Image 1 (cartoon, one colour):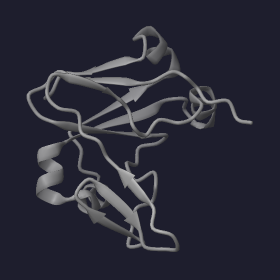
Image 2 (cartoon, one colour):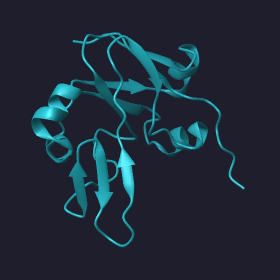
Image 3 (cartoon, helix red, strand yellow):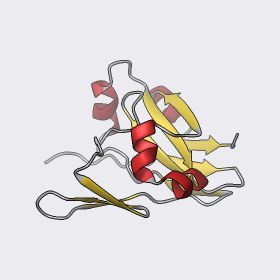
Image 4 (cartoon, rainbow, N blue to C red):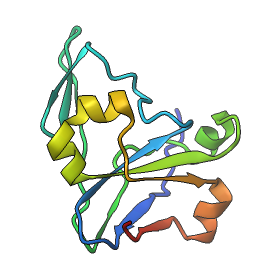
Length: 134
């Protein structure tokens, strides 16, 4: 049985806009290869193939914190699998999602901020990351 990591990445949104966060092992936000096989509706992404599957992006309201909803099951293995050992943390304003939609966000890599984070960084931050806005 795989061990499930009990460390949660907490994102504190210290800005005046609602945001979404996306974790990636490389410089592409499109880690799930969202393309025409998916249907985008609001904060939900549905698979068109086989059984309908759903992925939900949960927003983080201004001046609140929340654990990242797309975290790996095992952080150590995740970081070992990344070539440069730095995960990318993308921040996308809800305003951008409302304006362009998720499909365009992924296709054009629209984001407000990108951070490079190591496992050591997360340990030093006690697994709490603060986004201060632009």
